[in-house]
Length: 368
Image (cartoon, rainbow, N blue to C red; front, side, top):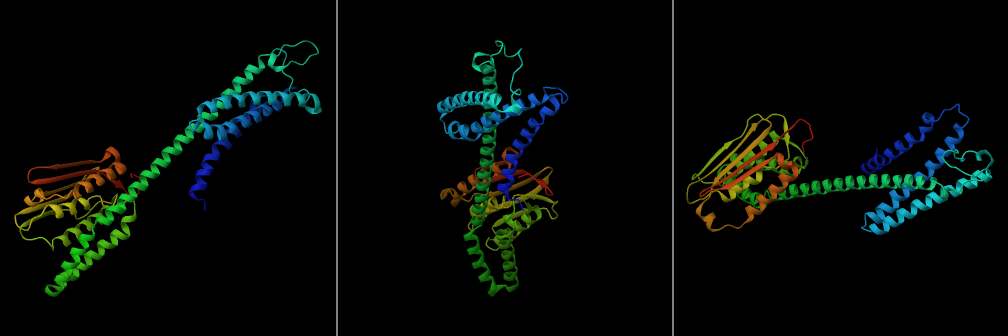
């Protein structure tokens, strides 16, 4: 089975193979196969193509990554210029050697008279003719082309790595949120269950079952990038039911969740932090307080709202933890959805409001 690294390597090599293959078959279409000079032109074409390929890959594999990408621009331009000169001189020198010493190719590198005027009986020296300058501009074009391709690939790789870092950041934030739901919550819930065992065994048994379902969801199912909305709703309902064990009759609790959710997917644990924050900071055992939670589908968005009262003691004694948590949620939403999601948080004199609207994912579509 092909690994991810091997797949990326194949994807980087394949365009080069296809490109050189296309260039390599040009003689089949450019030159007349029945012409007396077709063999000569074909040999000259592949001979020049060989030096173009050498120039391309010396610049592509050495000069650009080791000089240009390392901010050694002066050295890069100097060596790129020298590379062009060396390739031109070497190609013409070797061409002359082959012309003079290799019998089958003696006529293959003889340029037409109209392009290289010369005296009768004398072979022209290429730097005394326009050939040198024409060859230089051709090599310069190859250098520029390979530089452009290498820079484009480098930009694409940088962008890919940036996305991978962002993905890792999102995953780490998700793990952080999972750990924040919450050691204190589990501790308090277990204490409540322990107290219920003597008072109401059936209720305690139901609480243990809900807690077990929540832990299963947190440990296993929430590892997926996209989770079924129905499972996320069930998780929130388990959480709310367990928290109801702790609140007094002075707390008014309103919950509106869809009984039957459409088959859509969302990133896990998007809403639970707001709910936990409401129970942590929005209730009072001395004065009347309230929490209102709702979730609805407004195609093509999921709309979540959460309101809670702000007890007087909370105003006087804020630990700042909720602010840090909300800041992390905003970062996660931005990484997941960009500007496709909207989060509005307002704090009035006695009410804390949260409104979150996110696009949802139908079936297995890749939204996030």
